[in-house]
Length: 211
Length: 415
Image (tube, rainbow over all chains, first blue to last red; front, side):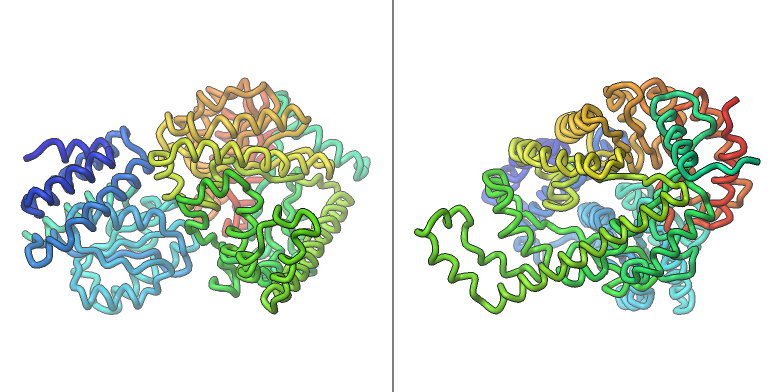
């Protein structure tokens, strides 16, 4: 696999990465291969973040670079795009309008080739239920920065239960004040301490679904 | 028992705090909080009431202070009682109880790129002009038409009179009317603060803070560019970002010096985006710490005590942030390892914190006492410590809070 583009992305060299993508598009290279290299670069970024070499600022820049690459490639990927790895529904729960963490998770999931249904902020439980039903997504992510939103998480879980969705949907939660206690309180499946953890959880769960 | 006079009580409390700040042992560990909306919940009024109802707010806060007896009181007026002011300005950076948030939830901040990446030059060349004609119209819906104001320096003599004609529009008339109404609300807010402060003094409680100042980087990242915008600017526009941080410094200095005018010499400095997870050590050293440190030093020089609230986890910054004069400031910690902070900073700065809100919310009074004991034993050793919750109290359980206050007053005595 071509190392230059992967390296440029994983080293967060924005201009180099974008120039390489443009160069390769112009040279008529397979857009899927270009996308794949960038996704590989994002995986490296995630690893460096997990190794505490990178910080949220770096993840934000990586996400921004990846977004631009995706925009450049998308007209050329129509019809030929690889199947996404899986579907994920995500949103900040009712009563909370914070979205920095949630947006970062969305970007990283997209970069990891997930089809993401981003419901935004202040999302009522019923909305999660609707979109989970429509999409058939096996994973939902609930985000919150406020402790008062713990009750909204609990209500959302109750709504999934009432709709009969709970057995086939895995629930991950995350956000500043979330701890393992919150997982038990809201009756979720797992929590992620950071955006990269959400990707790891999804990878794990999607593999289980595929079995 | 001799009844302590109010003056004695005030002096006793001030001395207790000042001893802790000077890294001496006071008579006992001081204990205080940023109460948030807790007193509203405690008194059975809504959060919405606390933002709109003068009398209910006054009573709720007085009764909470009387009940818990903190060493300084918490003023609801300048930090909560501005619902009508927000309405008159049609303030876009908040959603608040009754306006996008249910009556019993705290106001929340609406982040956005209120200043675009390509507007640094406009901001740097004339910050006042930028704020007046670009920023205010974006954050105050009522002042939207200020974007049509003529450039102010153009009216320098009779030669500029024609420009005044552009002010004569129904939109401008309404904007000025709203601005004046907001000014009256601001007066009422300050009157509330003054009346509350006086009542509190009569009950023996010193005021907590005389002014507030943000870290210059946070002004950019919280209010102007948004978190993502400011983070990306560190890579893409580092020179402009650094200049902007410098540009903001004197304004924050002026804000903090307000404490000298009202005689309450403590300056509250809540910090946001410099925490461990957000930026690398190099970024912190480059963009965040230099102007913040200068601000802390300037306040100290002016005889003020900075109360720097390191929100989130800043454990990796502990070595670096110890580079300030000894015994002149307070560092408040939320999720930072406070025991490690004592080890590293115990000889430099008074440490305040950090009974976890999760414990105050979901734990028992015994859990709370257990944590407080550890804090007093370790962080309180030799003085230089103030007991507090980890962050603002909004939804703490009253019995747990009671346990924190009472246990600290009993167990926190120095021999």
